[in-house]
Amino acid sequence: MLEIACFEITSAETALRSVADRIEFCSDQHLGGMTPGIEEFRYLKSVYRKPIYVMIRPVGGGFFYSETEFHEMKRSLQEFKDSGADGFVFGNLKAGNTVDLERNKELVDLAAGVPCTFHRAVDRTPDLDASVQDLIRLGFSGVLTSGGKQTALEGKEVLKELVASYSHRIEILIGGGVRSENIAELQKVTGGTHFHSSAIPQYEIFNSEDEIKKIQMGIR
Image 1 (cartoon, rainbow, N blue to C red):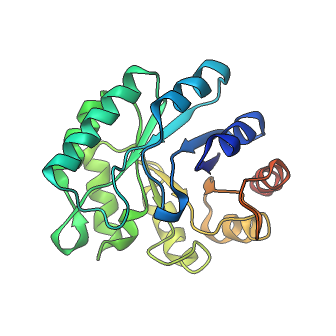
Image 2 (cartoon, rainbow, N blue to C red; image 1 turned 180 degrees about the horizontal axis):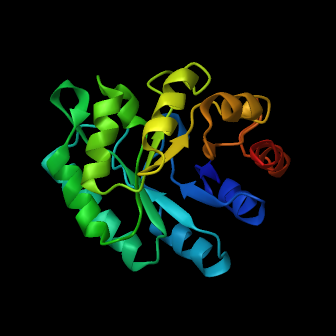
């Protein structure tokens, strides 16, 4: 399974027309991804049939949110759910960079069965193994991770352990610098079957349908 992170509508349309299996739709790449515009999402849903997972993140920077920002997350999730979102991507941390059990459970419950992926905030937690166990208990369907490292290649041995231990209970979505030139090695070492990439070639702004195809071929 290949998910393509899309930070604006041009890349989203390219990915939705491509051989990718689904997209993660967000905005503001320079901030690591934020909640996208609802009207752009509604347009994409009206034209394309592939699953669109929506990032729910009101501000950039860390993953600690004020009461006002958390209320905005709930409001956005409900709005996108009502508009047909196929999944959500979010993550709340608390002091010590541990998973905020209460707030994440509230969002998962609000999604009411729509799949939820915990994003790479998990890589900031001090005990990745314990964090994944928490996410399983909370009802997340997936977790996007680079194995606690800057890139998936750096974290490949940790990812291997996560896939072996938990992939039968939660989707271990491998991301962080995933490209066509390293996908074969990542799959061989980790044993993973779910990958996440922006598919943006070096020095480019938008993703590339050719790069998406090469990554998908590397997985298969």
